[in-house]
Length: 223
Image (tube, rainbow, N blue to C red):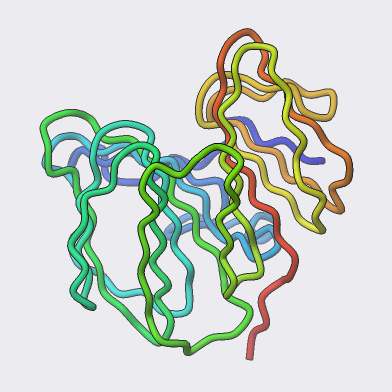
């Protein structure tokens, strides 16, 4: 198990434009050859957008983009005609497939905070698709079939424990609070990467906690 602390993330974005981004992997102008991906997971970005700030329309191809809003409201619009507002508790998935353009912004005046995760599909050049699951319940797995991955959302009360899935690649990101996992205490913004995970349990430490766990079963194929 490798633990990446929140302070070890690469700070990107454009603070002058009201955009702050903390990258867990190589991204944009930051490149670390030893930190490019974990299984199919190629990005886990903590985003904070001031009121009115955002990302203008830009293209994506052959990537699965999953977004989890922590606070505020995220306005999404894409070239396939979807116009949505994503709120805390919603899971948004944009499968770029053969190509799609989208924009994201904080349409309100309150701060917006969200976690965005990019996964590389096992096969490319599929048709683009989009989905929002409103108010996903605890313990309800969200399958990302194109990447052979499953997202698990866990919200824990103080002292509560939860079993984590067995998987060749398991990525655990702490959204709120702190959890104990494999002898380590992970706090907000920390993440653990576990190879060949088996019989792992996470426990809320010192209060309520929220975490996102990716259960991943295949590396992407290129070429």
